[in-house]
Amino acid sequence: MAETTKAPKTLNGKDTFAADYFKSDTDKQVWLGNPHIDNLVTVVLALGAEIWALKQRQIISEKLAEKKVFPTTAAIEAYKPTKAEEAEWDAERQSLAKRVYGWFARETASSAQAAK
Image (cartoon, rainbow, N blue to C red):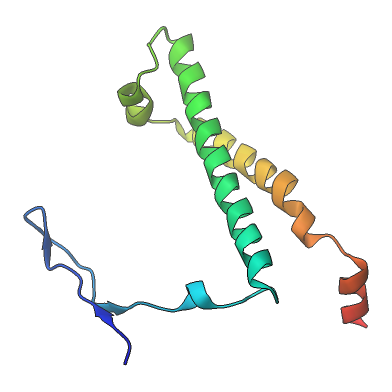
């Protein structure tokens, strides 16, 4: 029988709205025909997320420096982007994802064979 994880009813003195859940076994599944390939894809996706997080912090640091604010950890994490900045960031993130992950969508000899 699957193990149920109980969600806390309160957290730090506040009510939560989480529901109890069953842990899935998706971490044990093989999605791409080989667990090593699955692991490599997972690593590539995680690295992309880390790259974007660092890039975003760099952008914020530069914005703070332009305003003559020392870019401390607290200042970076407290930064609130404008709507225009959010739109810029979204476009830049989409561009990064397309450059990095677009290769996954390219047609290969094996994908052309499978389509026949």
